[in-house]
Length: 404
Image 1 (cartoon, one colour):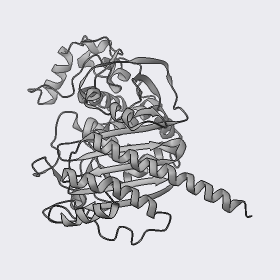
Image 2 (spheres, helix red, strand yellow; image 1 turned 45 degrees about the horizontal axis):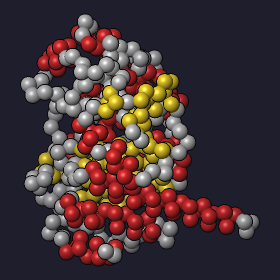
Image 3 (cartoon, helix red, strand yellow; image 1 turned 90 degrees about the horizontal axis):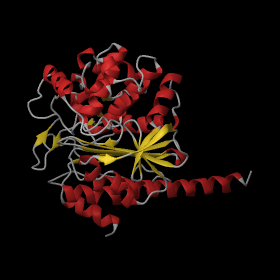
């Protein structure tokens, strides 16, 4: 199906969602191929999954491009912009990992220390033998995806952790877990002596150069906060929960998220301690299939087949305990890798992927939770187009340079 047909189909569905008009109107000649690739990847996904609004940001050799589709709210019909705030779900874990790595660089914690060292109420529990690194890489021994029903406040949370018994030896299996990385961030903040949310919003986000990223959206920014939508198309936003800020509580914009991607690719403008913290999140601690587990981030050798990237982001990786191959010592960031992270809440779906050695990256933010396979495929096609465009621009630059 031709790109323009997708556009016609999308416009025909205007009663369901609004596609930003004049997408190419202000685009340069160099940007048009990028815009065409993004439109062909995104518009069919929006139509198939009835997504109200979508923000896409890409970076190509240090240049940012933004493409916005649809509405932030079906009620107000407010259009999505690069500054619309979306819930990024589990991409929040990459910020938590950055905080923890920064805490270690500051001398406040050690990733290799046992968790109970930073929370006296856990002494005498299984966490006497589970390190912060085990928690941060989902290798604590079987902590579940979510807290069990009935664990409804901080006191019950501590009681749950104190009485919890691992199913596997720490460091031997990966089981994706909000309580695991949530406790990781909670203890890192304890080590810093500052509550997690305060530490993120007053220190970590500003040091990263993020001005439109929040855990608690301020009143004067609420008009920019999109409404998410359930499968039944009911408006929804994330609710408070135990360790929610650490595991899935960040709200951000396309502008800030693509800046975060660029910071992760080159660290320009960061203080030395934060640069080292970012690098620490990219270290590989173990492998599961073709995926290498970092802190928050997940990495793959590049170039990669779409099938392998989707397998690494599959439900099997989300819900099952997978045996790991430990990397000892941890492996520094390799030359040719794709780094990614998905994120979801009940009303939002997000995905970030970037390839540092190729200087390309993409951010997808939607106000509906749609299948991860569709996100990965769309981002894969966009990255492929960016990589191709980079090759063309490099060739053009070399040709231009030969004339002088």
